[in-house]
Image 1 (cartoon, helix red, strand yellow):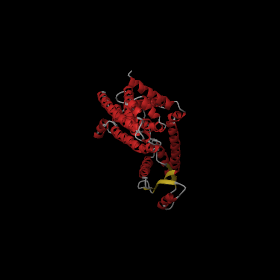
Image 2 (image 1 turned 180 degrees about the horizontal axis):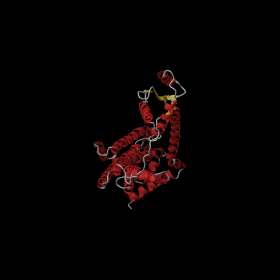
Image 3 (image 1 turned 180 degrees about the vertical axis):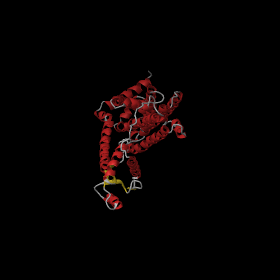
Image 4 (image 1 turned 90 degrees about the vertical axis):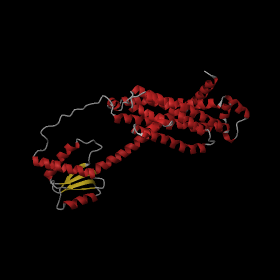
Length: 406
């Protein structure tokens, strides 16, 4: 190992230990759990509000009691084909009274019930009154009236025979499932780089404030400091991924019907190869973005400037996510080719391609292309790093330190 690499490893180990062996790192490691918890609480609140609204919502049929009994029987049979989330509101039957049209309008004005649609009149020519967004519910009520009329004319309620239902489970993934896996890979990589690579922007703020960076610059070349800090953050990222990857793999194993779900979204290139490529592309994406952020962050001399840099950096990451997402949703489009060629979106887009394409040769070319850009980015960013660090705190580092770091 050369002297430069030894110095780089020392800086990387120093930064890794300084980040990991602190109480705040535990909070950082469990941050996704807090996010999931708050999201679950919000989702449960929204679900309860939706369920409360659905419980109060009704479709009403103003029909005679004999017709109401037959309609309820047909309604129960028709609802069996709907999923729970797509099911129409509950059916309620009422006597039509002397003026069914007026009774239908009065139901919409009643604040004790939320009416989606009201049917009145004879079943062979019914009238249906519905709310502004109740067209589908009104269509269901019309179909219910027709089926009730047919059952009345036939003089039968239940059918004579029931169909035999059998379930068939696929042994391979569909194109839709593979595209979903590709988008999932893009989202996970975006989330990890947003959470982990973005942290490199503010790495130097404290060290520049207490002059630690000047001591490091006097001891080792600044390029070794740059690479060491980048590799130290990458080590933290790998630890984070290992921890959460282990938890998620165990959680998936306990999910109901997890085997069929994994088959439905199985990547085209194969799961082992896909995981290996995902790790390789994440590494390159982290090095690309982390080098840029570290080089740009070195130009800031205060936390205020660091905060001002956070917005354009986040917008840049969101832009790469949007470009790669478009490529994942439409792998054969021109925008997908652009996303795969543009160096900062290429790792995301190629990870998505691994889920939808069987070929391995394009990934070898993409990895080589991205490695070239990693070298270019690290070289340019290290020069920005040198320029920013040598003017730390608004004043030049002493000449003897600059000569030593050079």
